[in-house]
Amino acid sequence: MAEATQPSGGRPDTAAPAAIELRGISKAFGPVQANKNIDLRVEKGTIHGIIGENGAGKSTLMSILYGFYKPDSGEIMVNGQPLTIADSQTAIRAGIGMVFQHFKLVQNFTVLENIILGVEDGPMLRPSLAKARGVLKQLAEEYELNVDPDETIEELSVGHQQRVEILKALYREADILILDEPTGVLTPAEADHLFRILEGLRAEGKTIILITHKLREIMEITDSVSVMRRGEMVASVQTAQTSPEELAELMVGRKVILNIEKAAANPGQAVLEVRDLRLVDDEGVERLRGISFDIRAGEILGIAGVSGNGQTQLMELLGGYPEKGSKVSGTIHMNGDNLDLTGTKSDARTRRKRGIGHVPEDRQTEGLIMDFAAWENVAFGYHDKPAYQSGLMMNNTAIKSDAEKYFEDFDVRPRNTNLAARNFSGGNQQKIVVAREIERNPDLLLIGQPTRGVDIGAIEFIHKRIVELRDAGKAVLLVSVELDEILSLSDRIAVMFDGRIMGERLPSETTTGELGLLMAGVTDTENTPDSAGIPPEDRHVDELPEGRA
Image (cartoon, rainbow, N blue to C red; front, side, top):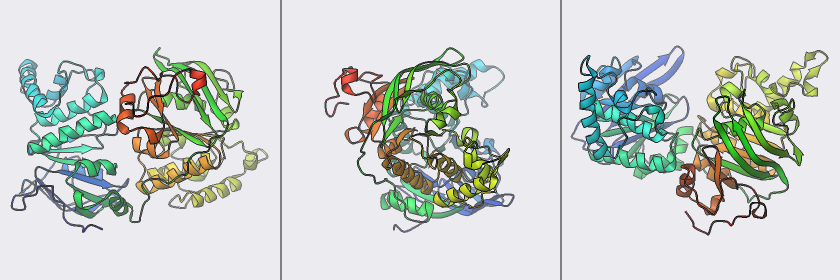
């Protein structure tokens, strides 16, 4: 294991003061110690990664640095000088900028208007806008941050909106830039472009602090990396002297299997057959545009794509609760029998009785009732199970017994099933939902974003259970924005863009670059948008020549 040292960049000058130095930073929220005696040194002109599990204290630490929170104790040094950061304006004046995971942009303002918002030169906006236009042009040319200054934010892609956030920070003359999970909503091509931008910023002497849970990105772009665990800084190393496996072990405190090992799939009969599925929402927007695919017993079909391209609507429709007012057409067959799309038997309860389990994308609003006890959440959706009935009353003893078994089998921590769902970490909340659905032994499991916001140790566990379900002869529809997850778990991959399936690939015969093109809507004439999962004899198109990008 690489030696844990104080953080330093790829080209550190130990004689020069660090861009950022934190000494003994502590912060508590009531009885919860979010940060405990944190020391951190980030050298000028480097890209420094910060990683850790959920609740490790990363966001709290960066919020302290940006002035959102005040530390209970400790000292902050910026460019060698002690600084009390009372608020975000103090941080901005000190040359610190932050790009948040959820952008802070006014959707119906133009790019220029967002750039000057809060830093206007006076009551008359015209001079401020003229100045910003000139500066923006210079920054765009210098850092590949091209974006139309007169475009409204709501008309921009997510990748371009992120560029606006970076331009905002640079316009405020930030020399230190904090990015919080910057690639979570980007296509691979957009992520690659972002990395080129960051490398350009570093080359100009800017300092970048990158918060991410993606170890591949840490290895690819950073000069040094610090690891946090349970509010403490446990290690800081040169990126070139470590590995993803070592970083994962430092984050969790034990060895972690990053790439799930699984045998080749042995698909059986078609469990789910979807043809020409269309959905128009209550505002008249077509969210699904002729979706067609099959999933067979004993295989995992992964749906890749950037969020907002119809995956949510597809999962909700298959799960039996499409948005109210939606108009649906097409056909779905489950084990050869037709599923009702619009009648009284199109609801989630009927879907469950037909053998469909569903782990929704948002566990907190769709998978759990946060104020209810964990044992009560275990029964949700299955409360009419005969074993849970006792005359006119629920058999709470039986439900609690199942909950205790699920907690043991799925390693939910703490083991206390009487705790409210909100008192569990995100990873353990997800385990409760996954356990509830998998333990019902469904013929088809719909699982959306299975590891979103989940600790790396829980990711390993959840991935194993998904594969075990497949190996038991069940069908799995996996929706994820994480390409590494899709490539690792899927037996086949379909890519969605703008409500359509752009193509299907085998994980062993594709690349992230090819998938990224499909995710951006770039396809080919030999593979039709609606062809995923349909046998060639049914769709009458040829497969792509080997290596076709």
